[in-house]
Each structure stands twice: as C-alpha cells, then as structure tokens.
Length: 126
Image 1 (spheres, one colour):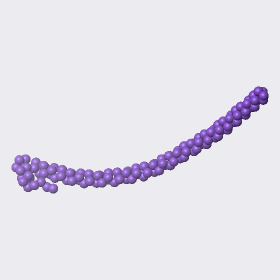
Image 2 (spheres, one colour):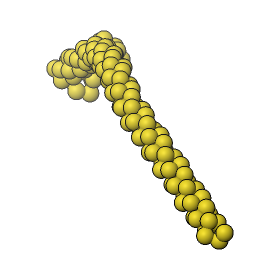
Image 3 (cartoon, one colour):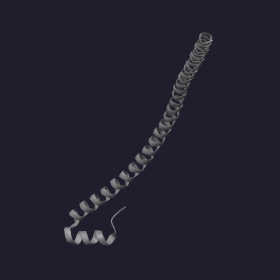
Image 4 (spheres, one colour):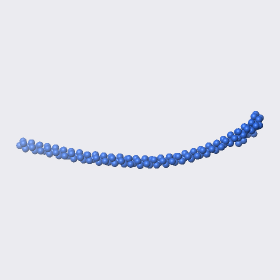
C-alpha cells in the first residue's frame, strides 16, 4: 500500500525529495512487514487451534481410558469388600449357632439339676 499523493507531496515539501522518498519507502516496508506478520499470526493461530484440538482429543481419550480402569479397580475393590462382609456374616451366623447350642445345653443341664434336686428333696421329705 503506497502512501497517498497528498502525504508524499507534503513530505517532499517538508523534508525534501530524498528524505521523503526514504520515509515513503520505510512506510511501505512497514506496511508490507505488518501484512506479513498478520498472515503469520493467522497461520500460527490456526496451528495452535489444531494443536489444542489434538491435545483435547488425547486428553479425552486418556481420561475415558483412565476412568474405565478406575471403574474396574473400584469393582474389584467392592467385590473384595463384599466377600469380606459375606465371610463376617458367615462367622457371625456360626457364632450365633454355637451360642444357641451352649444356651440350650445350659438350660437342659439347669433343668436336670433342678428336677434332680426336687426329686431328691421330695424323697427325703417323705
């Protein structure tokens, strides 16, 4: 983009022909460089967006894979806990059964002792 005619004429009047040509060349070079930088920035922005999209896909896939293995680990852990609770319930049921046997044995022995005492006392009192 070249400098407008009024600007170049005003520069020639103020600075002289050599300085005004140098100034206009510098302005044109700056405009060209600015356009190049803008193009590079647009390319860089599209590359960054593509890289971010790729990273997002990798992250999502790793997160999904990681959650899947975490879920499996949790299932295994809960299965172990369930097995341990089943073992504890079985042990508690066994102890309850043993307690009931001892209780029944105690009551039978107590009843036999009481019956024997009553029979012995009734034989003596007669």
